[in-house]
Length: 495
Image (cartoon, rainbow, N blue to C red; front, side, top):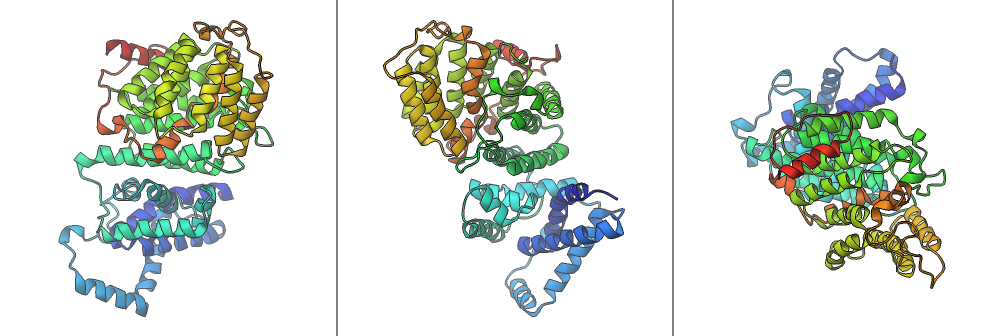
């Protein structure tokens, strides 16, 4: 007999393929979702006592089908169905396969089609996120509302509108046409990325981390990787999530306060996740081209591979951001590139790159821009400017841990009216590279992954990588076991 946790994991994995099969056969998203949920509840009750059936998915489909039959037999449902049939005729191509035709569409295909439907371009991005968590992830409306700090009634209306829009648009439950699949896949990845980012660095609230969201994003991305194993961007996104999640146990103290990377106890990092993520980076970069998620995963790998107390390979990170800016230009990428530039060529160069971002309406008011400016001003020796920028960032931050972290940084800069000598920590215009690795990483770790969340949410850009403007190149050979940045550097040189 499996443990409760194993059973819960099995049911979570089966849920999207069961719901997908029901919608494919019967339509009626709402009714199928209710039937699938009832079947899952029945399984959670009966299987611990009776044992898990040999064909667990088939058992769930049978029970859910019976629930649908009971629903259709009710008077109200019959009247609604008769009115629908009288007003429209379904084309032959849209008829669902017979319930016993298990070989027509695989369980993995049903899961993928369900993801495509929940992330359909007619839906707003916020609706895509909510519907994916509800229909594919199986989270309750209350759980989703709590995760995103909105009233449950508001989240319920958002999900209901999304389902109604799917119904009104008459979306067929089938694979998108071949020509549309790359774009539709990118929409799915963007939604999974946003879910993970909200869990990794919350937008607002008392807590910095929401592990339930990061765990769900990783689980859903694993499913996407299983059904799309040859898609390098899917592989890259999963690698990025795993490498970032590997550091989570050491990222906050018991009271929830933020711990900079240099101060983290690396023995608390999840070594298994890190190793898996590094292997996936190698796999993703071995394929032609360079994409948005692959490059971010390569950057995360450089950080993870830096030995404790060692020197971060900032030139490699800068080379990766140079590539990233070419294929996915945007304020968030430019912000992170400015940090890398400061580490390689000195803080004044980084501050110069921040100037255009001051006029960017998507970055204006962002605590991340203020925090980066504060860090670079401190590197340059401008303690008064750094202190004010840290205080501004603390006021703008949305979570308690970030507010406290930035306020403490402001206090640690030094008393007003003092200015540290430029060379005190190697912080002159040309001295960025001499900064100790722990000093440099301590203030930049919080900006590396989640800083583009604000821009993504506002849909300011569709990611140039998502428009097919990837860097086309021959597969990059895995010349050594570490340092994916080296491969990106060679790719950059070829361009």
